[in-house]
Image (cartoon, rainbow, N blue to C red; front, top):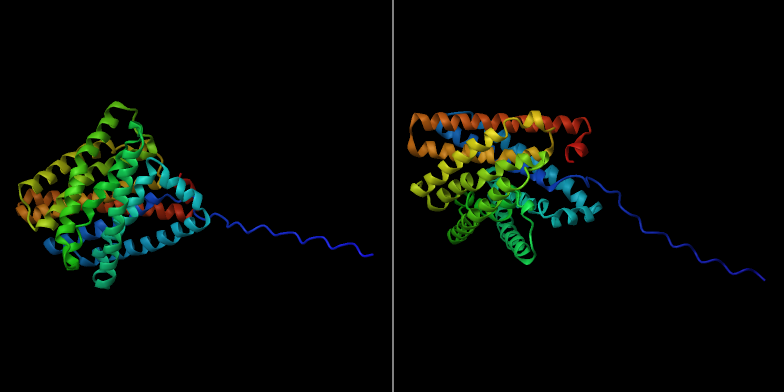
Length: 335
């Protein structure tokens, strides 16, 4: 009598090989910095006759960077989803998911010349996503006890990121955006005060930030620099309040530039250094708009100096990052 056939072995489902599991979402800050620098060069071209081609080249570099990062982080989400969820739940890194949405709010400055419809779609998605993200993070903060040591400059991103919503709205010409811009401006400025105070208290009374997080200090400039540009975009004027925002931002910029001047010597390069790029560009944009308003030589000198500093700083970050990628060092640089 023939022996019964043994049951066929069940094959285990294939587990995808993790791809780009080390890639931090904060690297989307590079898109923010490049787009902001493109806007700064566009303003400088209009006021000083500088080559507009530079603004276009930087802008398209931002678009290509956003596409590359979207593909890479998409691969991470597909093949290493637990790493994505762990990053989102992290009390510090989770706030930096806002950089993806802010990038969508800034890219319309570049995309508008290519396709107004595409630019409007990016802005609409970014606006809806930023609003939902802000609600989610504020609910998280209020839903459980937080630790003061976690109150780093990255905490400014989720809610103060709302200030980026009004920036591109005038250029897009979409209907019924004034109230939305006003809401974003109001909420962003309202939360900027207590969050800045909380982060400042942590910096004063707690241990210094770890070396890898030190570049994020420059984020503290953003509420004032971006707030200035957002206010002028919403109301179409520079008044005493807008001027105050710019001057406070300039003060903080000088303080933080002094704090970070020894960064290349004390801390090895990491992709977290890209955190300085958008505040640098935002400060240059604010200075250029302020110079257009006051029309005085000192303001022009300041604007051009900040544009040069932002350009040199972001060019150095881009060069070092590309060299690291060419050498196969991206995993180490993302650590």
